[in-house]
Image 1 (cartoon, rainbow, N blue to C red):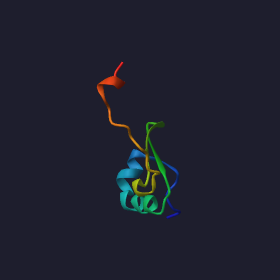
Image 2 (cartoon, rainbow, N blue to C red):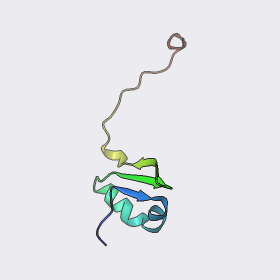
Image 3 (cartoon, rainbow, N blue to C red):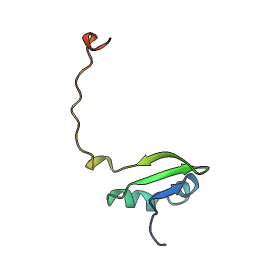
Image 4 (cartoon, rainbow, N blue to C red):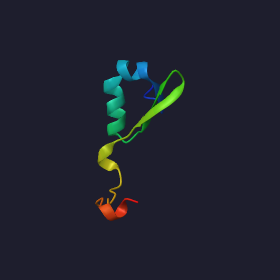
Length: 62
């Protein structure tokens, strides 16, 4: 196999799940499409930059 392309179909995801997960572990993001339409991105979660979330308070609402 020639590796995992950056964009795959949902069928590819089902058929090549292990190979795709291996690519994700190596840091390669993958976009999943359905019927030619982009439906989501798969990313390695352990390497995302940390974000600081401010707790929601009632003063923030409004």
